[in-house]
Length: 162
Image 1 (spheres, rainbow, N blue to C red):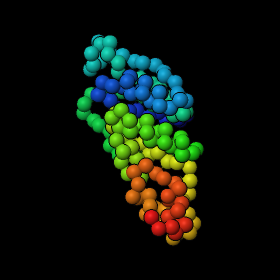
Image 2 (image 1 turned 60 degrees about the horizontal axis):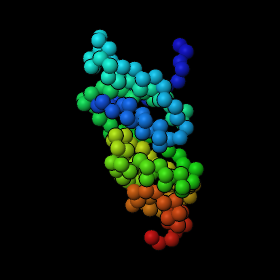
Image 3 (image 1 turned 60 degrees about the vertical axis):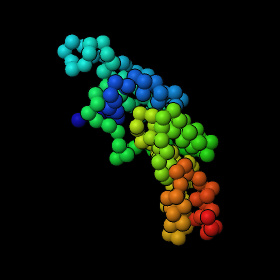
Image 4 (image 1 turned 135 degrees about the horizontal axis):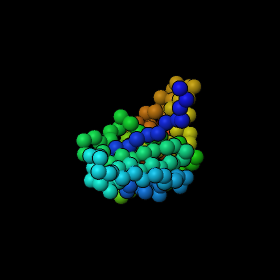
């Protein structure tokens, strides 16, 4: 069976089009695709947006206006691997702005409740260091953070007292 990859379906309560517009504004490498509307044969109001297809950073998404039954949880999140601190700051600040929320260890929820992990360059390498003592110290430092600070994690890994 030949496949064409994966598309992530995100369930919204009437805000799929606004969410797609928002994500396309946050992630600069994106495109809006088909906007499908409910018709007489469907469960929604004819003419209202049912689905919005969009792509960001090469990942395909469809926003579905499915109703109030389901909500996002931290059980699913998207990781944003950032090239540098400035990029990490941009995503962290943008996604927590306008109704988003900080969490812990670089996790944030955007204004629609979708969870993201903002990972600055070097963070994964520090908590995965081959030296278990360095990795443990970096991880302990990370566990105290909301926004990840790789410099502080590196100082902790090197044995500096926080």
